[in-house]
Amino acid sequence: MDSNKKCTLAQIEKQSLLSGKTDISLTHILSSERCQRIFSECREFRERVYTPIKTVFIFIKQVLNADKSCQKAVAGVIAGQLSTGEKPASSNTGPYCKARQRLPEETVHELVKEIGSTPINNAPSTWKPFGRDLKVFDGSTVKMADTQANQKVFPQHKNQKKGAGFPIARFVVVMSLTVGTVIDYAMGAYKGKGTGETSLLRNIITCIEKDDIVLGDRYFPSFFLMADLNKRSADGIFRGQGQRHYDFRSGERLGKNDHIVFWEKPYKPAWMPQKEYDAYPDKIQVREFKVAGNVYVTTLLDAKRYHKKELANIYERRWEVEINLKSIKAIMNMDMLTCKKPDMVKKEIGIHLLAYNFIRIIMAEACISHAAIPWKISFKGAVQLLIEFMPHFLNSSTRKNKLLYAEMLALIIKNKIGNRPGRVEPRVIKQRHKPFPTLKRQRSLEKERLMKKLNKRISRNAGD
Image 1 (tube, rainbow, N blue to C red):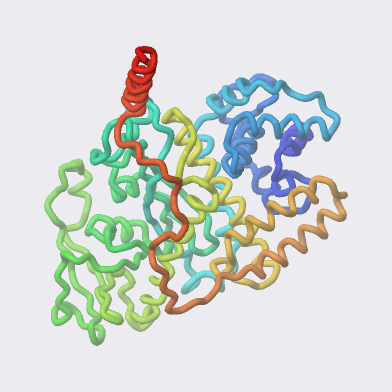
Image 2 (cartoon, rainbow, N blue to C red; image 1 turned 180 degrees about the vertical axis):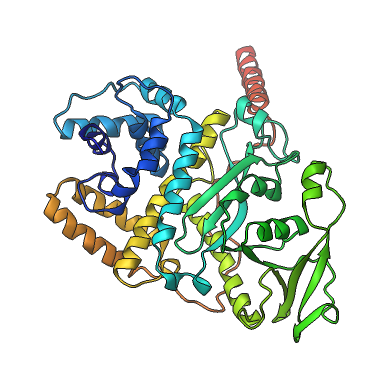
């Protein structure tokens, strides 16, 4: 990484995670040949204050901050330049906003994929069941600013009145349960053709590699997905779908409530081209088994090597994707996006996932250094430590930064997730909301109603 890019990264609040000031693994990731090629493929940028790499990291800082305004982001840039004796940039937010618009969404997407998959290759084998990478896919939704442009691409829920709801986007992630990073993602509207979770997953199925074990909820195990996993020499474990009949008296019996059966190819879906449909086999072998009253389906057919209780225990880790998505949406404030245009919304989602991957890599590094397990460490605790350590990294020497970083890694692994079996909490809140009614019509109509009421009162008082 050249000196100009190091100076660029020094302006970012999280610079100690990214620059060469400390021996942090993210430095090597960002300066890797692949990441540098991704940045070099950006559209032509003149010599500007906001270069592509600088724009990315200011954007990361912006989405992680409670105050997500562009004015706050630019103020941080100016403060950083003044602290290093540089000539400060303009306080006008225009140049930064234009730099975000110039940044291709494909660049952000490629960075998420590259940085999310980098630590998996270096993960200890003890983190991998049967020595194989464990991945999971799941979907969620996010809301965004209620603008006409966003409504056109990401329509609001059909049950909400116009002007009283928010545009909704659906996204699907493929996540590594080995280290917790997002490997790939796809997004679309909440409703409409090709916007379901299985449709979005088909767009990113290529990130599933040979010998991977993937997990998914009961929404996913279809004939075509299981066949796709076989084609990629990967395996999957899923909960059985409720509408499918499971008769353990049929097929090749492997034990009690455990057998191998053939699934026949269903009729061609309307969305699938005939040539693609013909490429699928007429039938595939699938293993079905029951543990503790729950039915599972898998492509792991060897019952001696893959005992059904062990597979059921592995499947319990699928819940981690729910927790990780909650971390991204709640702790990192991605539940409500602020961008007002669809292309910027897509970048904002990508930047959130990029920041999440950075933090997960730091957590994985802490676990490797202290023989801990990533999925037993608190994500929120790691974020809190990073935020508190940042000012000290900025104002310390290189030698002290190394010592501080080592101490931070040791503290990260102490924030373990509590084991609270049988915990039950009611889904209610105690604190009362402020006594304002809910907006049920367009804001313009409500404003018009208030103005009529005000003018009527003024006319009545003038007559008195």
